[in-house]
Amino acid sequence: MTINDLRGVLKGRVLLAGDDGFEQAATAWNLTVRQPVAAVVEAADVDDVAALVRYARRAGMTVTTQPSGHGASGDVEGLILLRTGLLNEVEVRAQERVVRVGAGVKWGQVLAAAGPLGLTGLAGSAPGVSVTGYTLGGGVGWFSRKYGLASDSVRAIEIVDADGEPGRVTAESDPELFWALRGGGGDFAVVTALELELYPAPVLYGGRVIWPEHRTREVYDAFLEITAEAPRELSVWINRLQPPARRRW
Image 1 (cartoon, rainbow, N blue to C red):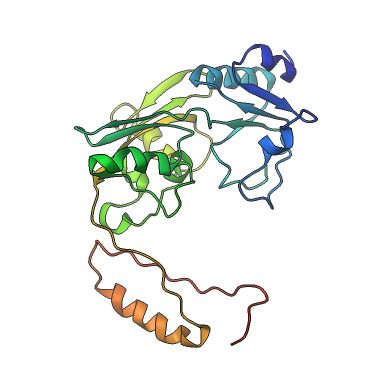
Image 2: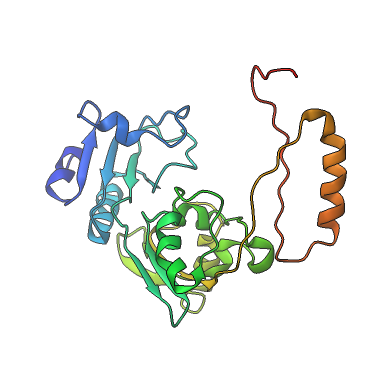
C-alpha cells in the first residue's frame, strides 16, 4: 500500500503535496511555522484514526496529531499530519458535572454548551484553542489557582494505541499511561476524546489594564503585593509588552 492508497481506506480527506488545499491543510496556527509533511489526513471518525495508525505502522511512517496547530514546532518533515477537527462532538452530562469532547472540539464550544447549565470547564484565555491540545499540555487558565490545571480535571481519555486499537484510559484502568498522557510529553497514543470535570460557573469579573512603561516598577510592586496573599479565586497575570515601532509620548 502506498500513501496514495489511503484514499481508498479512509472516509476522511487525504491530501498529498501538490493537491489543491494541501498547503492550507498543512498550515499551523502560527503562520511563521512551516510544516513540510508528507500528507495531511482529516479523520472522519475514530475508525479513520485507527486505520491510519495501522497503515503508518506497516509503512514505517510517523503520525503527528494536531487539532488546530497552536503548539506546532515545525519538526514534522516527511510525517503524516493527522487533523482531528471533524471529531467535534460535545456531550454535557450535567448531573455528573462531566463533559465528553471529541479531539477536535474548541473551548468556545464547551463553554457555550455548559454555560446555560450553570457549569464551566477550566478553559484558558481564548475560545479558539482546542480542548485536547490545551489539556494534554497541562492547561493553565483563569481558574487554575482555584481548581488546578485542566489536566487535573481529566476523568477519562479515549485513544487509539500504537497498534491501531481504540481504547479508554482512566486512573484505574492504566494509571501510568493516564499520568503520562496528561502532560508527560511523547507520543504515547492518539487521543480521540476526553472526559473532563465541570465546575459551578462563578460570577466572573475580569479584564486587562494597561499602563505606560515608565510605571513598570510601580506596577510590578503592586502585583507582588496583591499576589502575596491573594485568595484562590483571584488569578492575575502580568506582562511587559514592547510593541515594534511603538510611538513615544
